[in-house]
Length: 143
Ligand SMILES: [Zn+2]
Image (cartoon, rainbow, N blue to C red; front, side, top):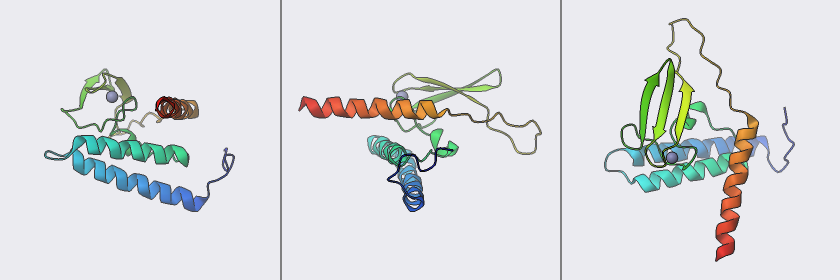
């Protein structure tokens, strides 16, 4: 565990960060419904991801399924994401930026076969963080 390595964060902060992430995803979901403001929903997703990064709170798997990791679009089935099943895997294509994400099928309780472990290497999380920070810096320096 690398707990405490980054300093500046306490268990209370992490708990609050988790609550904010949950609240933001709830707001995003609401905007993703018909009649909602989808760009606003995307914005909530970005905010939630930013909070998760700042406090190194890993987003719960249920949240990670709801947005595009590439462009942070809120994923709405049939509108901003297309899901296909292919040889036991779920292939999701972001209809906003075209990014394809493959995941194992979500487990069906009571069927028997153990679900594949959801492995998210820490390196991936870090690379997303640094990439987004780099973009932010470039944008602010251009002004
Ligand atoms: Zn996308």
